[in-house]
Image 1 (cartoon, rainbow, N blue to C red):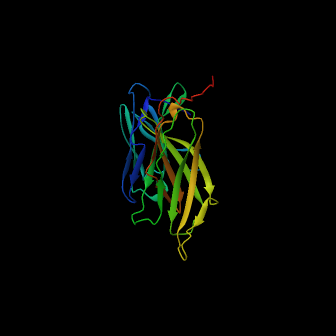
Image 2 (cartoon, one colour; image 1 turned 90 degrees about the horizontal axis):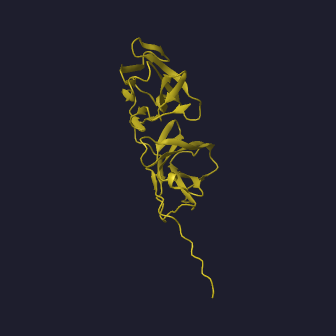
Image 3 (cartoon, rainbow, N blue to C red; image 1 turned 90 degrees about the vertical axis):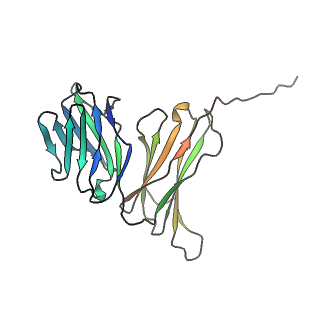
Length: 241
């Protein structure tokens, strides 16, 4: 899979409500290709083609013709999901056929929110101490729930400075061993803390890190942690004379 700046997808994180319509945008140079693909990747699974279209011929294949449509013209091929449902929460990639290969955009993560208020929250703590190249830091993501802790699938995204879209950088898979019940007597609340260690930091590691948690059929996003890399770290050595 090759990612290119020539294929641009709109919002990196998109939210919608059940039974609503959602549009995922994709733009590219009008001279690049006539064939466009849309891939869906449910977290923890491999991506698969859900729609293939041709700018002149229209839709050639749709995994679900009643719900997957396109709005297409030269340089644009937007995916429209009709009457969205929770199972539509996933990563979506737009790809174009070029030189017998497919060039991909960086992806859009779509979350279909629950209409009722959720008792689960995801909290990310800021990095308090200054961070320099070569340092190490641990980012943390805390999940509080008033229901049984169960298993969580945890994903980390990074949105770097100057980048139009964030990328998936790390997954925790299914974990429940980092959860513990609230120490308050009779409290039904469980708290799970997930860590992302970053060692020997470089300037390219700077950006906003988002924690996404898949739990109880819903996907919850943290508010993001800003990681800034300051100037070079100086080490002073004192020599006795």
